[in-house]
Image (cartoon, rainbow, N blue to C red; front, top):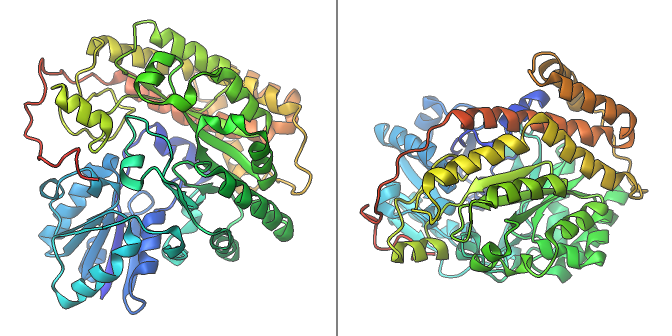
Length: 520
């Protein structure tokens, strides 16, 4: 059989990094690891192609070649997903849809020939056999969450590696915490499952053999969900980097209680972890308690962030506005916190009630759900009726974005971060060359776009001068963050022009399927 694996296009948001990636000549941040893993699970006798719409066009000739299209998507990709499905229907091509979206929308909403709900490792063999026999069922649902030891080496031969800025490895699934708004724990569970160390090393060896020498994103839901296993892996990663004399650097996601474990932070530093994304959410402790984000309470959030940064790891932060506990001073408090934290990449979004989450179920019971949403928390839209006046909430959100992504504010945060890592001991084992061909290209584009044609060019030149003198030891990091700032400023300008859709006075008048919010 000819299997066409398709990854739909993401909308242009803060998360896409599109306008920064263009400086590097890249088209997307990461490849579709889920589809690469599915491809490895399909029968070896099948012919396979992978089209990632984020780096290339999906052509009619690809669709005409295929016997079946296997499409994986997140909630935020639904518009592009539906467009692909329509094209497939017009050509009479069978479709299979999986990924997180299959766990949050009904079969009727997805409107594919076959839907796969849950993780692929335990399902693909049966699905493939049924497709070959022409007897595939409308839906396949995993009866249990598979052990990560059953996950194969992803098929990296199917992707155009040079079009991405980072490669991806998954070490674990699941998170031990119970945040009300989170769909990860609903889909992947609260008991972290991990791969064996040798599996991760094999994936890194595969990437290295294919010529990859840049960053690797360990795309776990919470890398430190099982701290003992994470420490074991970090030790192995440090040894692997030394043995291979490689400049691989790692990025991951974790919870803020990382700051409670100095041994783990030191091991992550030695393993080459350069950045970690943390869900900080809000400086308002009552909001954290109400959202059941208890791991962020009873601590100084600012001190926790600064401690993690002191181990040489850049903190990227996720923040949310729109909790029921938010008062009108939250916008000023959020802006002040972000500036003091030294978190350059501060992803602030409006709260979204994702289908399948505890939050969605609660708001549905309270009669406050408007629709299932588009999964984009950085737009000016809401899918529920907030406690705060909706117009005040959206305008306050807009004001936070304008303030934190003004050039002066953004560069000031970078300097706070650089000051914290300036005195940190340098890594001894592996030299980290910054001035690669791609980075040299990015620097030239940055000088032209930000230093010549930007209306905020004087702020840029002041920052560039500081980076080249006071922060010359961290010049590469400084300029990488400056380039990323260009993307955030472009998106902020776009969002400042958006008008908030008018919200109805009452909710729950939409005809939602009975299982929406219930099926995991």
